[in-house]
Length: 583
Image (tube, rainbow, N blue to C red; front, side):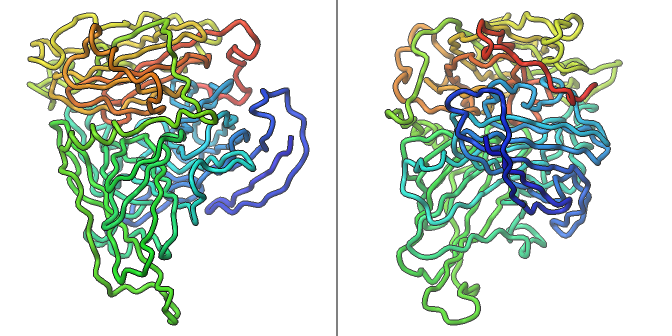
Protein backbone atom coordinates (compact mmCIF):
# COMPACT_ATOMS: atom_id res chain seq x y z
CA UNK A 1 0.00 0.00 0.00
CA UNK A 2 1.36 3.46 -0.89
CA UNK A 3 1.58 5.95 1.97
CA UNK A 4 1.58 9.68 1.22
CA UNK A 5 2.81 11.87 4.05
CA UNK A 6 1.26 15.32 4.37
CA UNK A 7 3.04 17.72 6.70
CA UNK A 8 1.52 20.99 7.87
CA UNK A 9 3.14 24.07 9.33
CA UNK A 10 2.12 25.16 12.81
CA UNK A 11 0.09 28.22 11.75
CA UNK A 12 -1.10 27.31 8.29
CA UNK A 13 -1.53 24.06 6.44
CA UNK A 14 0.97 23.62 3.61
CA UNK A 15 1.09 20.09 2.30
CA UNK A 16 4.28 18.37 1.16
CA UNK A 17 3.83 14.97 -0.43
CA UNK A 18 6.21 12.05 -0.27
CA UNK A 19 5.29 8.46 -0.96
CA UNK A 20 6.73 5.44 0.83
CA UNK A 21 5.80 1.80 0.54
CA UNK A 22 4.57 0.08 3.71
CA UNK A 23 2.87 -3.23 4.29
CA UNK A 24 -0.28 -3.11 6.41
CA UNK A 25 -2.42 -5.99 7.67
CA UNK A 26 -4.84 -7.44 5.13
CA UNK A 27 -7.82 -5.19 4.42
CA UNK A 28 -11.12 -5.97 2.79
CA UNK A 29 -11.31 -5.74 -1.00
CA UNK A 30 -13.01 -2.33 -0.87
CA UNK A 31 -10.16 -0.96 1.25
CA UNK A 32 -7.19 -2.19 -0.78
CA UNK A 33 -7.08 0.57 -3.38
CA UNK A 34 -6.30 3.54 -1.14
CA UNK A 35 -3.29 5.45 0.06
CA UNK A 36 -2.61 6.75 3.56
CA UNK A 37 -2.94 10.49 4.17
CA UNK A 38 -1.28 11.97 7.25
CA UNK A 39 -2.32 15.25 8.86
CA UNK A 40 -0.89 17.19 11.78
CA UNK A 41 -3.48 19.11 13.86
CA UNK A 42 -2.02 21.45 16.47
CA UNK A 43 -4.73 22.72 18.82
CA UNK A 44 -3.80 26.29 19.74
CA UNK A 45 -5.27 29.62 20.80
CA UNK A 46 -5.45 32.23 18.04
CA UNK A 47 -6.61 35.86 18.05
CA UNK A 48 -9.43 36.43 15.55
CA UNK A 49 -11.31 39.68 14.90
CA UNK A 50 -14.98 39.67 13.95
CA UNK A 51 -17.69 42.32 14.44
CA UNK A 52 -14.92 44.81 15.32
CA UNK A 53 -13.87 42.83 18.38
CA UNK A 54 -10.85 40.58 18.80
CA UNK A 55 -11.02 37.42 20.87
CA UNK A 56 -8.79 34.43 21.46
CA UNK A 57 -10.35 31.25 20.10
CA UNK A 58 -9.40 27.58 19.97
CA UNK A 59 -8.21 26.62 16.49
CA UNK A 60 -6.41 23.91 14.54
CA UNK A 61 -3.09 25.16 13.14
CA UNK A 62 -4.20 28.75 13.73
CA UNK A 63 -6.91 28.50 11.08
CA UNK A 64 -10.57 29.46 11.39
CA UNK A 65 -12.41 27.54 10.06
CA UNK A 66 -9.98 24.68 10.37
CA UNK A 67 -8.04 22.93 7.60
CA UNK A 68 -9.81 20.63 5.21
CA UNK A 69 -9.10 16.94 5.03
CA UNK A 70 -9.05 15.52 1.50
CA UNK A 71 -9.17 11.80 0.82
CA UNK A 72 -10.51 9.32 -1.68
CA UNK A 73 -12.88 6.48 -0.98
CA UNK A 74 -10.69 3.64 0.30
CA UNK A 75 -7.96 5.89 1.73
CA UNK A 76 -6.63 5.63 5.24
CA UNK A 77 -6.59 8.94 7.16
CA UNK A 78 -4.23 9.50 10.07
CA UNK A 79 -4.57 12.72 12.06
CA UNK A 80 -2.02 13.42 14.78
CA UNK A 81 -3.63 15.82 17.25
CA UNK A 82 -1.44 17.74 19.70
CA UNK A 83 -3.23 19.77 22.36
CA UNK A 84 -1.45 23.01 23.26
CA UNK A 85 -4.42 24.66 25.06
CA UNK A 86 -5.83 24.43 28.57
CA UNK A 87 -9.15 22.98 27.37
CA UNK A 88 -9.53 19.22 27.14
CA UNK A 89 -10.04 18.27 23.48
CA UNK A 90 -11.54 15.51 21.35
CA UNK A 91 -12.25 15.57 17.62
CA UNK A 92 -15.07 13.74 15.81
CA UNK A 93 -15.05 12.85 12.11
CA UNK A 94 -18.74 13.44 11.55
CA UNK A 95 -20.37 10.85 9.31
CA UNK A 96 -17.32 8.64 8.84
CA UNK A 97 -18.53 5.07 9.41
CA UNK A 98 -15.47 4.11 11.50
CA UNK A 99 -15.70 0.44 10.55
CA UNK A 100 -13.20 -1.42 12.74
CA UNK A 101 -12.00 1.93 14.12
CA UNK A 102 -14.45 2.87 16.89
CA UNK A 103 -11.53 4.21 18.97
CA UNK A 104 -11.16 7.02 16.42
CA UNK A 105 -14.77 8.26 16.55
CA UNK A 106 -14.03 11.00 19.07
CA UNK A 107 -16.98 11.92 21.34
CA UNK A 108 -15.65 12.70 24.81
CA UNK A 109 -16.36 10.03 27.44
CA UNK A 110 -18.10 7.83 24.86
CA UNK A 111 -15.23 6.40 22.79
CA UNK A 112 -12.32 8.15 24.47
CA UNK A 113 -11.21 10.30 27.35
CA UNK A 114 -10.22 13.84 26.29
CA UNK A 115 -6.76 14.83 25.11
CA UNK A 116 -5.31 16.94 27.90
CA UNK A 117 -2.93 19.86 27.49
CA UNK A 118 0.50 18.75 26.34
CA UNK A 119 -0.76 15.36 25.17
CA UNK A 120 -1.16 13.78 21.75
CA UNK A 121 -3.62 11.33 20.23
CA UNK A 122 -3.54 9.85 16.73
CA UNK A 123 -6.90 9.30 15.01
CA UNK A 124 -6.57 6.45 12.49
CA UNK A 125 -9.45 5.42 10.24
CA UNK A 126 -10.23 4.26 6.70
CA UNK A 127 -12.92 5.69 4.41
CA UNK A 128 -14.98 2.66 3.39
CA UNK A 129 -17.82 2.88 0.87
CA UNK A 130 -18.29 6.64 1.22
CA UNK A 131 -17.74 9.57 -1.10
CA UNK A 132 -18.94 13.18 -0.86
CA UNK A 133 -18.78 15.83 1.85
CA UNK A 134 -18.48 15.24 5.58
CA UNK A 135 -16.82 17.33 8.28
CA UNK A 136 -14.82 17.20 11.49
CA UNK A 137 -15.42 19.08 14.71
CA UNK A 138 -14.60 19.14 18.40
CA UNK A 139 -16.83 16.82 20.42
CA UNK A 140 -16.56 18.11 23.96
CA UNK A 141 -18.67 20.86 25.52
CA UNK A 142 -19.20 23.76 23.04
CA UNK A 143 -15.67 23.89 21.62
CA UNK A 144 -16.93 23.01 18.16
CA UNK A 145 -18.01 26.68 17.91
CA UNK A 146 -14.57 27.34 16.42
CA UNK A 147 -13.04 23.86 15.99
CA UNK A 148 -14.43 22.55 12.72
CA UNK A 149 -13.53 21.99 9.09
CA UNK A 150 -14.55 20.05 5.95
CA UNK A 151 -13.80 16.47 4.97
CA UNK A 152 -13.75 16.10 1.19
CA UNK A 153 -14.07 12.47 0.07
CA UNK A 154 -13.43 12.05 -3.64
CA UNK A 155 -14.51 8.93 -5.55
CA UNK A 156 -11.92 6.26 -6.20
CA UNK A 157 -9.53 7.08 -9.02
CA UNK A 158 -11.22 6.59 -12.36
CA UNK A 159 -14.74 6.61 -10.90
CA UNK A 160 -16.74 9.65 -12.12
CA UNK A 161 -19.43 11.53 -10.27
CA UNK A 162 -22.97 10.40 -11.21
CA UNK A 163 -23.46 13.92 -12.60
CA UNK A 164 -21.48 16.12 -14.99
CA UNK A 165 -18.06 17.03 -13.67
CA UNK A 166 -18.20 20.54 -12.20
CA UNK A 167 -15.87 23.34 -13.28
CA UNK A 168 -14.83 23.97 -9.67
CA UNK A 169 -15.70 22.74 -6.16
CA UNK A 170 -16.22 25.17 -3.27
CA UNK A 171 -16.77 24.42 0.45
CA UNK A 172 -19.52 26.54 2.03
CA UNK A 173 -19.44 26.15 5.83
CA UNK A 174 -22.06 27.83 8.00
CA UNK A 175 -21.14 28.64 11.57
CA UNK A 176 -22.06 30.86 14.49
CA UNK A 177 -19.96 33.59 16.08
CA UNK A 178 -20.13 34.65 19.70
CA UNK A 179 -18.48 37.74 21.13
CA UNK A 180 -18.58 35.89 24.46
CA UNK A 181 -16.63 32.77 25.37
CA UNK A 182 -18.93 29.88 24.44
CA UNK A 183 -17.54 27.76 27.29
CA UNK A 184 -18.67 30.45 29.71
CA UNK A 185 -22.05 30.69 27.94
CA UNK A 186 -22.96 27.03 28.39
CA UNK A 187 -21.38 26.83 31.86
CA UNK A 188 -23.56 29.68 33.09
CA UNK A 189 -26.68 28.18 31.50
CA UNK A 190 -26.11 24.81 33.17
CA UNK A 191 -25.55 26.50 36.52
CA UNK A 192 -28.66 28.73 36.38
CA UNK A 193 -30.90 26.20 34.65
CA UNK A 194 -31.98 28.75 32.07
CA UNK A 195 -31.50 28.98 28.34
CA UNK A 196 -28.03 30.02 27.10
CA UNK A 197 -27.31 33.33 25.43
CA UNK A 198 -27.51 33.17 21.63
CA UNK A 199 -24.81 33.89 19.07
CA UNK A 200 -24.08 37.37 17.72
CA UNK A 201 -23.81 36.37 14.07
CA UNK A 202 -23.89 33.53 11.60
CA UNK A 203 -20.90 33.02 9.33
CA UNK A 204 -20.07 31.66 5.89
CA UNK A 205 -16.56 30.18 5.89
CA UNK A 206 -15.92 32.05 9.13
CA UNK A 207 -17.08 35.46 7.83
CA UNK A 208 -20.27 37.27 9.02
CA UNK A 209 -20.75 39.42 5.91
CA UNK A 210 -22.13 42.89 5.16
CA UNK A 211 -25.51 42.61 6.91
CA UNK A 212 -23.79 42.85 10.31
CA UNK A 213 -22.23 45.99 11.72
CA UNK A 214 -18.53 46.38 11.07
CA UNK A 215 -18.36 43.30 8.84
CA UNK A 216 -18.38 44.48 5.23
CA UNK A 217 -14.70 43.59 4.89
CA UNK A 218 -15.36 40.15 6.42
CA UNK A 219 -17.54 38.89 3.57
CA UNK A 220 -17.21 35.60 1.72
CA UNK A 221 -17.20 36.20 -2.04
CA UNK A 222 -17.73 33.39 -4.52
CA UNK A 223 -16.20 34.54 -7.80
CA UNK A 224 -17.59 32.71 -10.81
CA UNK A 225 -17.49 32.68 -14.59
CA UNK A 226 -20.60 32.75 -16.80
CA UNK A 227 -21.87 29.44 -18.13
CA UNK A 228 -20.01 27.23 -15.66
CA UNK A 229 -21.18 24.66 -13.10
CA UNK A 230 -19.81 24.78 -9.56
CA UNK A 231 -20.18 22.09 -6.92
CA UNK A 232 -20.99 23.69 -3.56
CA UNK A 233 -20.02 21.46 -0.64
CA UNK A 234 -22.34 22.87 2.01
CA UNK A 235 -21.89 22.12 5.73
CA UNK A 236 -23.94 23.37 8.67
CA UNK A 237 -21.46 23.69 11.53
CA UNK A 238 -23.71 26.08 13.51
CA UNK A 239 -24.15 25.11 17.14
CA UNK A 240 -27.87 25.58 17.60
CA UNK A 241 -29.66 26.56 14.38
CA UNK A 242 -31.09 24.88 11.32
CA UNK A 243 -30.64 27.16 8.32
CA UNK A 244 -32.35 28.06 5.06
CA UNK A 245 -29.91 28.93 2.25
CA UNK A 246 -30.52 30.57 -1.11
CA UNK A 247 -28.66 32.50 -3.83
CA UNK A 248 -30.54 35.37 -5.45
CA UNK A 249 -31.75 34.71 -9.01
CA UNK A 250 -30.11 31.27 -9.11
CA UNK A 251 -31.22 27.69 -8.68
CA UNK A 252 -29.35 24.88 -6.93
CA UNK A 253 -29.45 21.19 -7.87
CA UNK A 254 -29.07 18.91 -4.86
CA UNK A 255 -26.98 15.83 -5.75
CA UNK A 256 -25.75 14.45 -2.41
CA UNK A 257 -26.43 14.64 1.31
CA UNK A 258 -24.27 13.31 4.16
CA UNK A 259 -21.83 11.76 1.64
CA UNK A 260 -24.56 9.73 -0.11
CA UNK A 261 -25.70 10.52 -3.67
CA UNK A 262 -29.37 11.40 -4.15
CA UNK A 263 -31.68 11.70 -7.12
CA UNK A 264 -30.92 15.24 -8.37
CA UNK A 265 -33.59 17.90 -7.91
CA UNK A 266 -33.62 21.65 -8.39
CA UNK A 267 -34.54 24.10 -5.67
CA UNK A 268 -34.31 27.83 -5.06
CA UNK A 269 -33.75 27.24 -1.33
CA UNK A 270 -32.34 24.39 0.69
CA UNK A 271 -32.66 23.51 4.36
CA UNK A 272 -29.73 22.12 6.32
CA UNK A 273 -29.62 21.21 10.00
CA UNK A 274 -26.54 21.33 12.22
CA UNK A 275 -24.47 18.25 11.44
CA UNK A 276 -25.79 17.79 7.92
CA UNK A 277 -23.95 18.28 4.64
CA UNK A 278 -25.40 18.93 1.19
CA UNK A 279 -23.65 18.93 -2.18
CA UNK A 280 -25.43 21.17 -4.68
CA UNK A 281 -24.63 22.18 -8.24
CA UNK A 282 -24.75 25.87 -9.09
CA UNK A 283 -24.91 26.60 -12.81
CA UNK A 284 -24.15 30.24 -13.52
CA UNK A 285 -25.95 32.37 -16.08
CA UNK A 286 -24.78 31.82 -19.65
CA UNK A 287 -24.16 35.55 -20.19
CA UNK A 288 -22.51 38.09 -17.91
CA UNK A 289 -25.46 39.44 -15.85
CA UNK A 290 -24.07 42.90 -14.98
CA UNK A 291 -25.12 42.32 -11.38
CA UNK A 292 -23.98 40.73 -8.12
CA UNK A 293 -26.05 38.40 -5.99
CA UNK A 294 -26.40 37.83 -2.26
CA UNK A 295 -26.10 34.24 -1.03
CA UNK A 296 -27.92 34.23 2.30
CA UNK A 297 -28.67 31.92 5.20
CA UNK A 298 -31.00 32.48 8.14
CA UNK A 299 -32.55 30.18 10.75
CA UNK A 300 -35.49 27.83 10.56
CA UNK A 301 -37.07 28.19 13.99
CA UNK A 302 -39.54 25.82 15.62
CA UNK A 303 -38.99 26.10 19.39
CA UNK A 304 -40.04 28.68 21.93
CA UNK A 305 -36.56 29.69 23.07
CA UNK A 306 -34.76 32.86 22.02
CA UNK A 307 -32.59 32.55 18.93
CA UNK A 308 -30.19 34.52 16.77
CA UNK A 309 -32.67 36.24 14.44
CA UNK A 310 -30.14 37.49 11.91
CA UNK A 311 -28.98 36.73 8.38
CA UNK A 312 -25.53 35.93 7.05
CA UNK A 313 -24.70 36.95 3.50
CA UNK A 314 -21.94 36.23 1.06
CA UNK A 315 -21.73 37.64 -2.47
CA UNK A 316 -21.77 35.81 -5.79
CA UNK A 317 -19.64 37.86 -8.18
CA UNK A 318 -19.38 37.23 -11.93
CA UNK A 319 -16.18 37.68 -13.90
CA UNK A 320 -16.75 39.91 -16.90
CA UNK A 321 -15.21 38.05 -19.85
CA UNK A 322 -15.04 41.31 -21.87
CA UNK A 323 -13.19 43.24 -19.20
CA UNK A 324 -9.64 44.35 -19.98
CA UNK A 325 -9.01 45.90 -16.58
CA UNK A 326 -6.67 44.41 -13.99
CA UNK A 327 -9.75 43.26 -12.12
CA UNK A 328 -12.47 41.56 -14.12
CA UNK A 329 -14.89 41.65 -11.16
CA UNK A 330 -16.94 44.86 -10.91
CA UNK A 331 -18.07 45.99 -7.49
CA UNK A 332 -20.40 48.89 -8.34
CA UNK A 333 -23.23 46.76 -9.69
CA UNK A 334 -26.84 46.10 -8.63
CA UNK A 335 -26.93 43.62 -5.74
CA UNK A 336 -29.93 41.29 -5.66
CA UNK A 337 -31.23 39.55 -2.53
CA UNK A 338 -32.90 36.11 -2.41
CA UNK A 339 -36.32 35.48 -0.94
CA UNK A 340 -36.01 33.03 1.94
CA UNK A 341 -38.89 31.12 3.58
CA UNK A 342 -40.44 32.47 6.75
CA UNK A 343 -38.54 31.64 9.92
CA UNK A 344 -41.14 29.05 10.96
CA UNK A 345 -41.97 27.61 7.53
CA UNK A 346 -42.37 23.96 8.53
CA UNK A 347 -44.30 23.28 5.32
CA UNK A 348 -41.23 24.16 3.24
CA UNK A 349 -39.01 22.11 5.55
CA UNK A 350 -41.27 19.07 5.19
CA UNK A 351 -41.59 19.40 1.40
CA UNK A 352 -37.84 19.83 0.97
CA UNK A 353 -37.05 16.78 3.11
CA UNK A 354 -39.59 14.75 1.15
CA UNK A 355 -37.73 15.39 -2.11
CA UNK A 356 -34.60 13.63 -0.91
CA UNK A 357 -34.35 10.12 -2.40
CA UNK A 358 -31.45 7.71 -2.77
CA UNK A 359 -30.15 7.01 -6.28
CA UNK A 360 -30.98 3.34 -5.68
CA UNK A 361 -29.36 2.11 -8.87
CA UNK A 362 -27.01 -0.75 -9.67
CA UNK A 363 -23.86 1.23 -8.90
CA UNK A 364 -25.24 2.97 -5.81
CA UNK A 365 -27.96 0.71 -4.37
CA UNK A 366 -30.15 1.55 -1.41
CA UNK A 367 -29.65 -1.47 0.83
CA UNK A 368 -32.67 -0.82 3.01
CA UNK A 369 -33.25 -3.53 5.64
CA UNK A 370 -36.45 -5.24 4.53
CA UNK A 371 -36.84 -7.56 7.51
CA UNK A 372 -36.54 -6.07 10.98
CA UNK A 373 -35.09 -7.85 14.02
CA UNK A 374 -35.68 -5.14 16.64
CA UNK A 375 -38.07 -2.19 16.78
CA UNK A 376 -37.56 0.78 19.07
CA UNK A 377 -39.70 3.81 19.86
CA UNK A 378 -37.98 6.87 21.34
CA UNK A 379 -39.53 10.12 22.48
CA UNK A 380 -37.13 13.03 21.98
CA UNK A 381 -37.67 16.44 23.48
CA UNK A 382 -37.31 18.83 26.36
CA UNK A 383 -38.14 18.44 30.03
CA UNK A 384 -37.19 19.83 33.40
CA UNK A 385 -35.41 18.82 36.57
CA UNK A 386 -35.68 20.25 40.08
CA UNK A 387 -33.47 23.12 41.09
CA UNK A 388 -30.83 21.97 43.54
CA UNK A 389 -30.19 23.15 47.10
CA UNK A 390 -33.59 24.82 47.51
CA UNK A 391 -32.68 27.52 45.03
CA UNK A 392 -34.86 29.06 42.32
CA UNK A 393 -33.54 28.35 38.85
CA UNK A 394 -34.19 30.20 35.60
CA UNK A 395 -35.98 27.36 33.81
CA UNK A 396 -39.77 26.87 33.61
CA UNK A 397 -41.50 27.59 36.94
CA UNK A 398 -38.22 27.87 38.80
CA UNK A 399 -36.87 24.51 37.55
CA UNK A 400 -33.89 23.73 35.32
CA UNK A 401 -34.16 23.04 31.61
CA UNK A 402 -33.36 19.50 30.63
CA UNK A 403 -33.81 17.20 27.65
CA UNK A 404 -34.13 13.48 27.20
CA UNK A 405 -34.64 10.38 25.09
CA UNK A 406 -37.47 8.23 26.46
CA UNK A 407 -37.38 10.53 29.50
CA UNK A 408 -33.78 9.53 30.30
CA UNK A 409 -31.48 12.54 30.40
CA UNK A 410 -28.08 11.07 29.64
CA UNK A 411 -25.31 11.80 32.13
CA UNK A 412 -21.80 11.65 30.71
CA UNK A 413 -19.61 9.25 32.69
CA UNK A 414 -16.16 10.16 34.00
CA UNK A 415 -14.48 7.42 31.99
CA UNK A 416 -15.07 6.40 28.38
CA UNK A 417 -17.93 3.96 27.76
CA UNK A 418 -16.05 2.14 24.99
CA UNK A 419 -13.06 1.50 27.21
CA UNK A 420 -15.31 0.30 30.04
CA UNK A 421 -17.11 -2.04 27.64
CA UNK A 422 -13.93 -3.43 26.10
CA UNK A 423 -12.28 -4.06 29.48
CA UNK A 424 -15.45 -5.63 30.93
CA UNK A 425 -15.56 -3.05 33.72
CA UNK A 426 -18.95 -1.45 33.20
CA UNK A 427 -20.12 -1.62 36.80
CA UNK A 428 -20.52 1.87 38.17
CA UNK A 429 -19.98 3.39 34.71
CA UNK A 430 -23.15 2.55 32.78
CA UNK A 431 -26.24 0.34 32.88
CA UNK A 432 -27.44 -1.76 29.92
CA UNK A 433 -31.08 -0.99 30.64
CA UNK A 434 -31.96 1.87 28.31
CA UNK A 435 -35.77 1.75 27.78
CA UNK A 436 -36.79 0.61 24.29
CA UNK A 437 -40.15 2.41 24.60
CA UNK A 438 -41.29 5.31 26.80
CA UNK A 439 -41.82 4.12 30.38
CA UNK A 440 -44.72 6.54 30.88
CA UNK A 441 -46.73 6.83 27.64
CA UNK A 442 -48.92 9.88 27.06
CA UNK A 443 -50.50 11.76 24.18
CA UNK A 444 -47.16 12.94 22.83
CA UNK A 445 -48.52 15.74 20.65
CA UNK A 446 -51.48 16.62 22.87
CA UNK A 447 -51.64 18.28 26.26
CA UNK A 448 -48.32 17.64 28.01
CA UNK A 449 -48.29 15.83 31.37
CA UNK A 450 -48.13 17.82 34.59
CA UNK A 451 -44.91 16.13 35.62
CA UNK A 452 -42.17 17.12 33.17
CA UNK A 453 -39.23 15.94 35.27
CA UNK A 454 -36.68 13.72 33.53
CA UNK A 455 -34.58 10.90 34.96
CA UNK A 456 -30.81 11.47 34.99
CA UNK A 457 -28.84 8.32 34.22
CA UNK A 458 -26.07 6.74 32.13
CA UNK A 459 -27.74 3.93 30.19
CA UNK A 460 -26.90 2.23 26.91
CA UNK A 461 -29.02 0.13 24.55
CA UNK A 462 -27.38 -3.20 23.71
CA UNK A 463 -27.98 -4.90 20.35
CA UNK A 464 -26.32 -8.00 18.87
CA UNK A 465 -24.03 -7.66 15.86
CA UNK A 466 -25.85 -7.46 12.49
CA UNK A 467 -29.23 -6.65 14.06
CA UNK A 468 -31.68 -5.02 11.63
CA UNK A 469 -32.99 -2.02 13.54
CA UNK A 470 -36.10 0.08 13.03
CA UNK A 471 -36.19 3.21 15.16
CA UNK A 472 -39.09 5.66 15.40
CA UNK A 473 -38.31 9.01 17.03
CA UNK A 474 -41.25 11.07 18.25
CA UNK A 475 -41.21 14.76 19.17
CA UNK A 476 -43.32 15.73 22.19
CA UNK A 477 -45.31 18.74 23.32
CA UNK A 478 -43.41 19.08 26.60
CA UNK A 479 -42.24 22.72 26.66
CA UNK A 480 -43.41 23.07 23.06
CA UNK A 481 -42.89 21.31 19.74
CA UNK A 482 -39.44 21.57 18.22
CA UNK A 483 -37.43 20.07 15.40
CA UNK A 484 -34.55 17.91 16.64
CA UNK A 485 -31.71 17.00 14.23
CA UNK A 486 -30.66 13.55 15.51
CA UNK A 487 -27.21 12.20 14.65
CA UNK A 488 -26.15 8.57 15.07
CA UNK A 489 -22.41 7.89 15.20
CA UNK A 490 -20.93 4.90 13.40
CA UNK A 491 -23.87 4.31 11.04
CA UNK A 492 -25.81 5.61 8.12
CA UNK A 493 -29.54 5.03 8.28
CA UNK A 494 -32.43 5.09 5.81
CA UNK A 495 -35.24 7.56 6.50
CA UNK A 496 -38.17 5.31 5.61
CA UNK A 497 -41.03 7.39 7.02
CA UNK A 498 -42.03 10.71 8.55
CA UNK A 499 -45.21 12.39 9.62
CA UNK A 500 -46.92 14.84 11.96
CA UNK A 501 -48.88 14.03 15.10
CA UNK A 502 -48.43 10.78 17.02
CA UNK A 503 -46.84 7.84 15.25
CA UNK A 504 -49.41 5.10 14.62
CA UNK A 505 -47.71 1.65 14.52
CA UNK A 506 -50.85 0.08 13.06
CA UNK A 507 -51.18 2.43 10.08
CA UNK A 508 -48.02 4.42 9.41
CA UNK A 509 -45.66 1.57 8.35
CA UNK A 510 -47.86 0.95 5.31
CA UNK A 511 -46.56 4.24 3.92
CA UNK A 512 -42.87 3.53 4.52
CA UNK A 513 -40.54 3.96 1.54
CA UNK A 514 -38.44 0.80 1.41
CA UNK A 515 -37.29 1.32 -2.20
CA UNK A 516 -35.31 4.57 -2.43
CA UNK A 517 -35.38 6.38 0.93
CA UNK A 518 -32.67 8.93 1.59
CA UNK A 519 -29.64 7.59 3.46
CA UNK A 520 -28.17 9.94 6.09
CA UNK A 521 -26.28 10.23 9.35
CA UNK A 522 -28.27 13.21 10.71
CA UNK A 523 -32.01 13.80 10.31
CA UNK A 524 -34.50 16.32 11.64
CA UNK A 525 -37.39 14.95 13.68
CA UNK A 526 -40.30 17.18 12.57
CA UNK A 527 -41.81 19.53 15.19
CA UNK A 528 -44.89 17.83 16.59
CA UNK A 529 -44.15 14.77 14.47
CA UNK A 530 -42.08 11.63 14.07
CA UNK A 531 -39.45 10.05 11.87
CA UNK A 532 -38.72 6.37 11.18
CA UNK A 533 -35.26 5.11 10.25
CA UNK A 534 -33.75 1.70 9.55
CA UNK A 535 -30.15 0.56 9.76
CA UNK A 536 -28.03 -2.55 10.10
CA UNK A 537 -26.02 -2.69 13.34
CA UNK A 538 -22.92 -4.06 11.62
CA UNK A 539 -20.31 -1.99 13.47
CA UNK A 540 -19.24 -3.28 16.90
CA UNK A 541 -18.58 -0.64 19.54
CA UNK A 542 -20.31 2.06 21.55
CA UNK A 543 -21.99 4.68 19.40
CA UNK A 544 -23.32 8.04 20.53
CA UNK A 545 -26.73 9.29 19.39
CA UNK A 546 -27.69 12.87 20.17
CA UNK A 547 -29.50 15.99 19.05
CA UNK A 548 -27.11 18.17 17.04
CA UNK A 549 -28.52 21.33 18.60
CA UNK A 550 -25.68 21.71 21.06
CA UNK A 551 -27.85 23.18 23.79
CA UNK A 552 -30.10 20.10 23.73
CA UNK A 553 -27.10 17.78 23.85
CA UNK A 554 -25.81 19.68 26.89
CA UNK A 555 -29.21 19.28 28.55
CA UNK A 556 -29.12 15.50 28.04
CA UNK A 557 -30.85 14.73 24.71
CA UNK A 558 -28.37 11.94 24.01
CA UNK A 559 -27.88 8.20 24.49
CA UNK A 560 -25.56 5.43 23.34
CA UNK A 561 -25.92 2.18 21.38
CA UNK A 562 -23.70 -0.73 22.33
CA UNK A 563 -23.27 -3.10 19.39
CA UNK A 564 -21.83 -6.45 20.45
CA UNK A 565 -19.11 -8.35 18.62
CA UNK A 566 -19.91 -10.78 15.86
CA UNK A 567 -18.38 -14.24 15.49
CA UNK A 568 -15.74 -13.52 12.84
CA UNK A 569 -12.45 -11.69 13.49
CA UNK A 570 -13.46 -8.71 11.33
CA UNK A 571 -16.73 -8.44 13.28
CA UNK A 572 -15.06 -7.72 16.60
CA UNK A 573 -14.01 -4.49 18.26
CA UNK A 574 -10.22 -4.30 17.96
CA UNK A 575 -8.14 -3.45 21.04
CA UNK A 576 -7.52 0.23 21.83
CA UNK A 577 -4.45 2.02 20.50
CA UNK A 578 -1.55 2.44 22.89
CA UNK A 579 -1.85 6.24 22.96
CA UNK A 580 -5.56 6.27 23.92
CA UNK A 581 -5.99 9.18 26.37
CA UNK A 582 -6.66 8.38 30.02
CA UNK A 583 -9.23 10.09 32.19
